[in-house]
Amino acid sequence: MDYIAEGLGSRAWKYQLVEALDGMNRKFANPYVIFYPTTSRDGMPFQINKSIRDIQGRAFKEEHAWRGNIVIAKYRDDPFSSMIDASMADFPILKNYLLTHGAPKQ
Image (tube, rainbow, N blue to C red):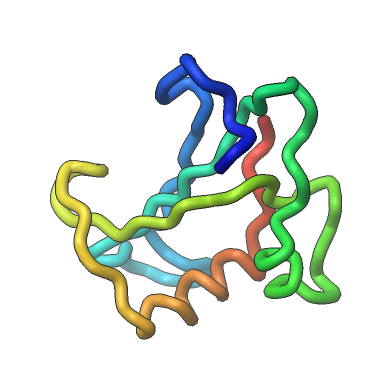
């Protein structure tokens, strides 16, 4: 998070909602939000996120790579109004999502 542009506030970040996994008929009772950086201090692209690259393994595609440090939060109620604690039980869900979804187009 060292290289995110300063002075832009929330404009230096975007977010992706994770409300369900592929094939689910219902949304999660407590969905997730992934915050990812969009603007670096020097204007250069962020480095590829190595942890997510490792999760994706052979499915990794550089053109859809998650870049920079991401923050994943779990919430309830209206989006982002009430964050709740995540547990180790959330990891496989998020791992599945990251394995099957590249970063949103910028």
